[in-house]
Image (cartoon, rainbow, N blue to C red):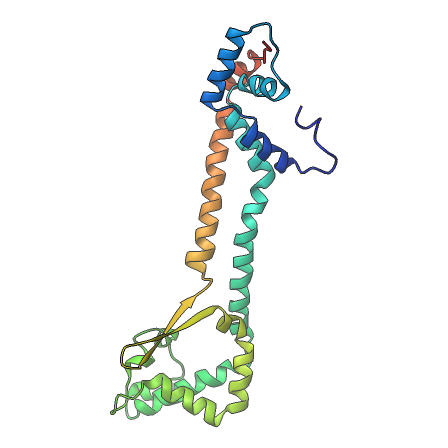
Length: 243
């Protein structure tokens, strides 16, 4: 009835949502309908009450409607996850395609070889990217504790390789825009910079995929239960009855 009376162009998911929110009777509403039927058996229900009465006779009507809605809306759940994945891929691509990033890495290698001069480590042809993680470059500080090795490398890069530095900042815009920065003013006039990643693979993308997978598995188990031989037999033997 809901589909037959639907206006032209109405979306099925909107109709299903309307039916779920307005026409599936709650236990209290079903009790009231039963009392109305018993007290006035010859008085017909109104259109809405009749629909609610009929649908209450369908076995597992709530679960069936949930599965039906999910079949028509599951793609919407993936849009946010897909957008996060595309955003993350753009960040990976900007590092892969940055033409001047090797210039910065070669400067880091040169500085490391200079600091390790006279040792075997002072003749390295490369270094592990783990050196760029916390505990790597930042662990090496100058004698006056005014800054760590990152500050020295970036100052040298910006001063001696300015065109390359400007180009690298342009190339890495997707990654730089993915960091939210907030300055906190401390007591005494000092400031502290807080940085937070907006989108990352573990917390944003993987968590979204996990949520969608769990929802799918739940609906799949529910659908399997509804389509089991016993459920089909129960549904075939039940039919709505009007008062």
